[in-house]
Amino acid sequence: DTAVSQTPKYLVTQMGNDKSIKCEQNLGHDTMYWYKQDSKKFLKIMFSYNNKELIINETVPNRFSPKSPDKAHLNLHINSLELGDSAVYFCASSQMIRREQFFGPGTRLTVL
Amino acid sequence: GDSVTQMEGPVTLSEEAFLTINCTYTATGYPSLFWYVQYPGEGLQLLLKATKADDKGSNKGFEATYRKETTSFHLEKGSVQVSDSAVYFCALSDRDTDKLIFGTGTRLQVFP
Image (cartoon, rainbow over all chains, first blue to last red; front, side, top):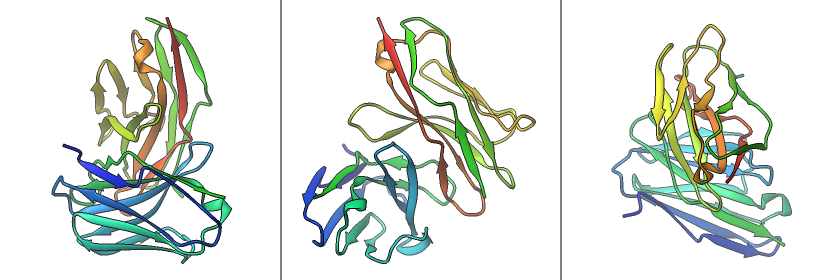
């Protein structure tokens, strides 16, 4: 069984569109995260939620809006997509803050 | 702020060679330290971790020791295999902010 899953795996879209990436974890964890990996493989945290409450918002443009309907889900909605948003986005989860994080397989977003 | 510095890659080795990937960190306080591995086309997997000074993390023949005096967490393996070819990320988890801060990643290529 997949522990942290993301959909879709690949997303190709035009500039200016709005898109969403979904993340679900079945580990019973209470904290979830979004990370962005750029073309040089550099990974940077974007957001974290603990028990559906926003904990970290790492100076991400407000075109990016995370939504956590429950502890097992953290979705990422992106408005007005730009070329620079092209990257691989990883969801992760952990049990309690500061514990080891488990990552999903990633969503490769390509903005044309 | 906190940061992680890794040696630049790629690291190219023959099978059964000894591996060292250097990692040093800068942090206020006492972070936990991690090595994650990313196989081609996949998400990140936790390889090993250490939560306090002098702890040694180990998994699948890989080891790393938390050295507070040199602020280092170098990854080692005595005999690499072709299947170890991947990108390796050193990371720290700040105890106050809950962020995972990654190094830039080091690509390892192992040839038969």
